[in-house]
Length: 263
Image 1: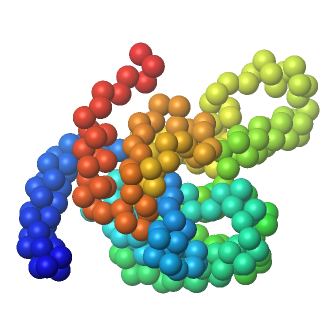
Image 2 (image 1 turned 180 degrees about the vertical axis):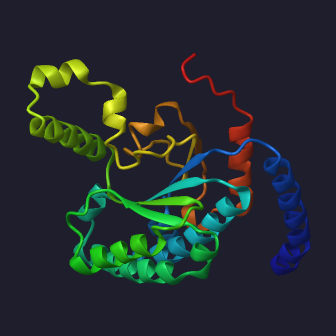
């Protein structure tokens, strides 16, 4: 009975998705979309599977959502896949994640969709804590797409918003020391722009819109500096279950908002 009901509702779902896509595609798109991919482990647990399986489902969903972003013409996307705090998880889970990162980086470097759409992949975050194998795979991925001029895809790994700001300030201070500037001179000349130019995302627009899945209503440090004027959307669905309709509804919500930028 349930199977029959699902088969009957599928055409209605398809029709609604198509109508919603036409509606959304005619409106303004975020120049930069941030995605906090949350809920992989809870999804796996609900199915009685290991956390690794949840992360694998999450990877497949990330590819799917990337295609939706390309379809909607979003020019910059930042996905947060591994935080600095995630190193505190069990050694077994972290080891499995590292293997997954190597496999997917190598796969993405050869993915015809990445090259057909000229997606430029950048890895942002701290490199400390990752093995040489992971770092080599990430560097090969970046190098294989460096010449692309389509969407910019930032993959945030070993990322923390506080750490990013600290790294930007450290870089600024070290540059000032090389120029022989005093702390007073540095303080007198310091502006928000000086710090922004040294963030991991320097040269890219700040995120207009940030989506977090799993129902958690917080940023957890994601793009702390850059999200000062971002719009937020918290989807009450785990990342592997995030549907295109959920994505389109989020974009519709963004388009309905009036952005004032503090004015």
